[in-house]
Image (cartoon, rainbow, N blue to C red; front, side, top):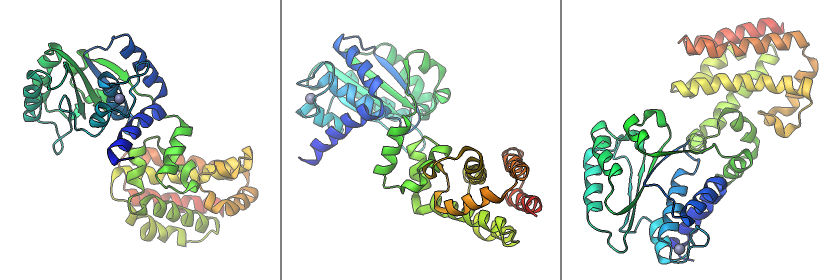
Length: 341
Ligand SMILES: [Zn+2]
């Protein structure tokens, strides 16, 4: 199989895998020739918006469609999936935004008649990134398309898309992908199974996970929190210095602070779950230190544990109130040490 063929196959299987219900819905719409001229796909990154937009476009152009679904193998399907079809245009942000020149070019392309057939399609990936100028320029075009044009506008956050655009498109909300699908994607990304539970407690966004695992950042942070937690439970003052030496150096933005606070909660939640809910080890967020978690859960009195959990839960509020991050962690460390004494 050539690279181009496998790209087309991946688009189709990605769409089916991530959004089976939406694919089914659009297959019916395509079969009934019921497509409207402009859609706004709204959903988190990783939820399959581009794959579905391409898949539906392929179904429209496909030489051998089956019940509204593309074959994924014909010349049309292959060229669309590989972004080589002259009648299918995909616009991406140029830098941080989609600029008016990009929309002008799109309009110029589309005012010509279709190069090959009479169907045309365009996809704007990052509709929230259009400058106001670009969006306004696109509006009239969406409202009065020339010929047989279908447009897909894709966004991670519909509240950032101009209301005039939203009101002129048909909104399709993409659900977050199902947990089983999410786990399978994590496995495909090559992520160690031991991190799966913690990840799913923190996000269901694959792009986010991808960023977290750049340079092993997530694994390093999880290890630092594990070590901090173990020192705490030895009643060791090393836990206090570790905040500055091991944890804070890993934190370089606001999101990382929030993840750290959540990880602190999760490691104590593991103790709570082991103590009261007898959860399986696969359900732990910190399975790497499961033996120690079991020992701590066995030893710690119930009231003490609940008080500590209450303490770590309060950190979210402290972070929201913009208190110094290192101070939040150090204060928490001292208070937990006091409780454990
Ligand atoms: Zn085809």
